[in-house]
Amino acid sequence: EDSPEKIVTGLVNENQHASKSIISDNAGNLYVNIGAPSNACQVKDRTAGSPAQDPCPILEKAGGIWQFKANQQNQSYAQGVLYATGLRNVVGLDWDTNQNQLYAMQHGRDQLAGLYPDLYTNEQSAELPAEEFFLVKKGSDFGWPYCYYDQIQKKKILGPEYGGDGKKTGRCADKDQPIMAFPGHWAPNDLLFYTGNMFPAKYKDGAFIAFHGSWNRSPFKQAGYMVVFVPFKNGKPYGNYEIFANGFTGKENVMGSGQAKYRPCGLAEGFDGALYIS
Image (cartoon, rainbow, N blue to C red; front, side, top):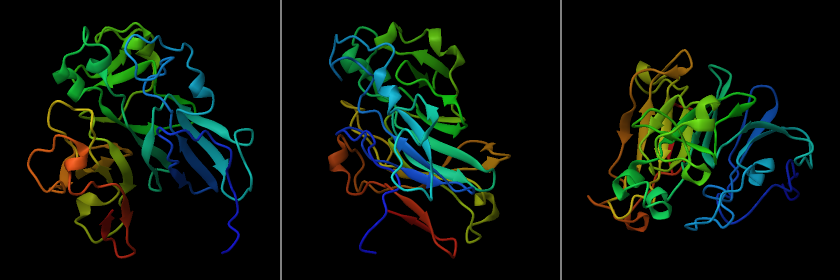
C-alpha cells in the first residue's frame, strides 16, 4: 500500500516516553497509550529541588490511554475519548478477548533517592516504586504523577514532589489499584494474553509479560530481562507470577542496561500457539 491512511494524528510526541502502544477491542475501538514526557511532572524535569506542577498540565494530552475509532481517518484529541488517566507510561497493552477488558503494564517513576536523598535510601530507590499491572476501565485514574505504588507497604503512596514522605497516602487513597505489582525498574515492554493450545492448560487465558530491564537500580545490579507468566482466573491474577524465560543478559551481573546481551521487548502468538519473543 503506497498511501497509508492516517487514523490518529497530532498526538503529544516529545523525546521521553514517546512510543504509542495501540490495541483494538472487539467493537471497532482503538486504545492508544500517550506516555507522559516527564518523570513526575516537576517544573524542571528530573531536577532536585524543582517544584511539582499541581495540577499536572501534562495529563490534559498525555499520561493516559485514549480511545479512538479504528475505521475513522484523521482523528485527534477532539474525536477521541480519554479512557484512563494517571499513567506515566504504558508500553505493554493488551485486550483480553476472554474477559472483554483492557489490561496494561506501567513503567513506574525513577530517581526517588537521586531526587530525594533525605527521604529514600539507594536500596529503597532500587526496589521502588512497583511496576504496576492494571485492569483498565473507562474512567480509571491510577494516580500518576501524584502517587506511586509501594509493593512492600502494599499501598499507593503520595509522591515526594507532592508532599509525600515515603509513608503517607494522602490524596492517593481513592486512586485505582494495580491487580499485581512487580519489583521496581524491571521495565515492562509488552503484555500478551495467551489464547493458544500448544502450551499446557494452565497457560490458557493467562498473561505473558516481557521485561526489558532498566538503568534506575544503580548503583546496584539491574533486574528484569525476562518473560514472566501470570495465571488468570475470572479476569484476575490467580496466585503468583512465574519466570517463563530468562538468561537473556548473557552474564550474571548487569550493572547497566547497555551491558545486557539481549533485552526482551515484544511478544506475539503464532497461529499454532507458539510464543514469539523479540
